[in-house]
Image (cartoon, rainbow over all chains, first blue to last red; front, side, top):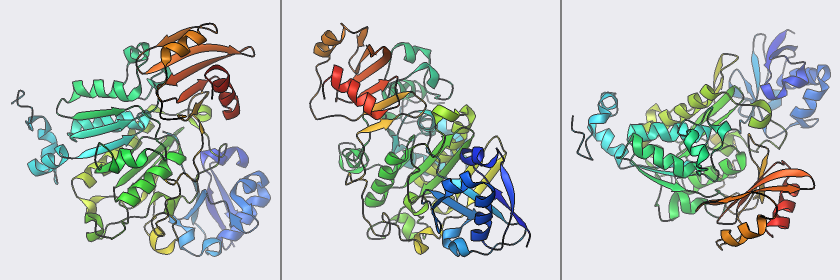
Length: 92
Length: 370
């Protein structure tokens, strides 16, 4: 098992020690996020509605593809993949 | 150069040289109507460029008035507009008249909500817009704009910006009968709700209040919206970007998020099930905290026009009152806290000095009467 890159949006960086991205291990999106939650519990609380459900205002893109249209949380990941957490931008 | 002929296309020479424009394209733009919802950072940039490009009719809707802190990024306004306390839509009309007199601007000083959005976009005195351009600062109104776009088959270009990050995305909606020109061309795209099922809750994301906003960023995002709008107005649906663009101007990243499958795979309430919950007012709120300001807006209370003189007389006991044809502004000290109350003649109010809807409602009730 090796690490993939998880991109943290500006809005959530304070819950990830200010980091723009994290290197996290896992075989699936679910496992990667579970490891994120362990290392950064506050960030986890912002992402998940319940143990198995991501908040509907959070979008997750694996290599720029929405995971909802792949295998959702069960989408497999491989080393070097990039998982971006993308909230909607409301300002203007 | 033929500057006297009001229909002369001379000024568009450099644009008409571009592939896909030409004289025919330019005439098509001149015959087009764009509805710009919100005339702040994104809206001023979009209105400016659409006017210069020669889009014949711009309907500019904004509920707000100009403040000094707007000038850092809201390109159509200047210090004189601040001094004159002009509503944004009206100031935009005056500025665009100087930029391109061939363009007709209809300023609308209203809060866009479920009671008026269909009239503004499709069914009212302005007719049916050819495109809706997003100059908004909140997701409630964006979901409304998105529903109107889907319900009435009007393309809608979304843009959003906060801090140093922005997004834009063009929606060529799936229509009821599937017979729009972009559907015939096989170019319909998922709607905004296919992509963002839910608006982020208050406090989830930074706002312009907490994070600020970079002037050039909003110009980038709004100009991207305008590029897509021009492609759509010219009928070049094949050139429209099917991806959601996400830019961080400080981290130097640009993403093209692939969203095209969202319609097929998803179960969108709006464009797939054709249920228009926002237009029906199921989620409407009476108050809105305004982005970038320590202020709350209260929706219009009814159809009746307010009597400003009478209200001004009552409020003068509490502090300075100014009024013009568009608005009344009063400085009020309530429980030792200073507030600025701005009242529009449709009953809508902006209470500055608080972010708490309840506090704002309280002040309105106390000094204006709910």
